Image 1: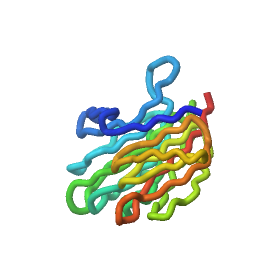
Image 2: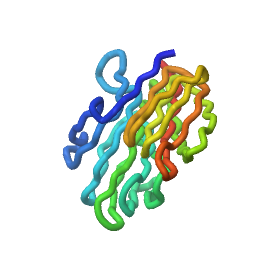
Image 3: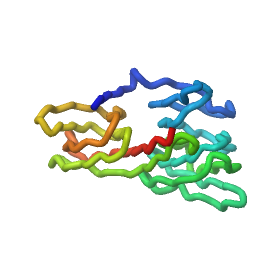
Length: 196
């Protein structure tokens, strides 16, 4: 099994597809043809109301991580409430979505998967000081940390991770995760099922 420990130095800032904002790309797995991505993880800074970029064939999950949140107007699909931190909200990238801030700028965690190549599932764990077993199922899996934490392998090895780091596994594994600071730590677990 391969394992990658990504830090801020591995991420890249880039403009939104529609040019009206910026995002920090954490991880992007390209298609074999190189004309897009199979799946992607990023964090966006939203500073004003405005339309979301359209991504045909893409399933999206968005989650508020900083700020008071926003409401997403998805046209005939209705409205989506993005005011509860660390609560994943799925929607389709084909939808015409307009975001309205509820009280100042926000940061949101984004997972996108091209449904022709992959399916993704996003869950949130709360880590405490006591290591807890985590059965990571899927191929691959990414765990993004919103606070300092440690990973313990079944053979006893440890990996220390900082706030904002991402742990990427190429297949399922059993390990222990724990917060290393005085406060509980939220972690986003992205499980991927590759189709092609």
